[in-house]
Image 1: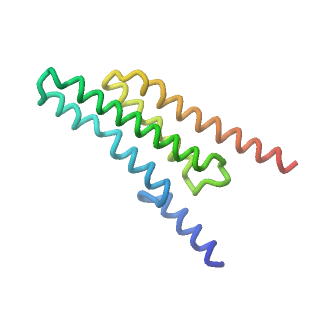
Image 2: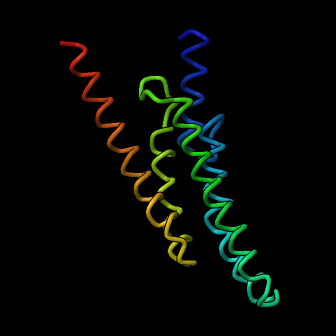
Image 3: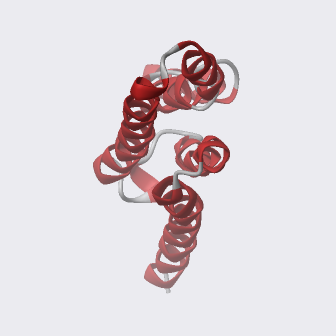
Length: 137
């Protein structure tokens, strides 16, 4: 086993367990920070005056949009399945998890974009795998 193979095995194991490394780590942190953030936002909404509640919601909605755009940015960086680090496709599909906080606050762009994103990643994966099989014929 050469050094490159050992490094890939270590990256795959780190990607499978824990937060991983590289883009896997960034996507997982985006999901871990962005998704449950609706609980502190709900607390803030209870504490602030009524005149500021819409602004707090706008900031949170901008955060959800930013998280989804981060997923798009990572996908653009690694568009082909063969070029992605291990488990990155699974982590990209987890962007659909932003559906629940969007549903909680009634943010309809997030309710549409999050499941559409997960569906897009799945279709892109299937098309890439199918294209890879056809290239070998």
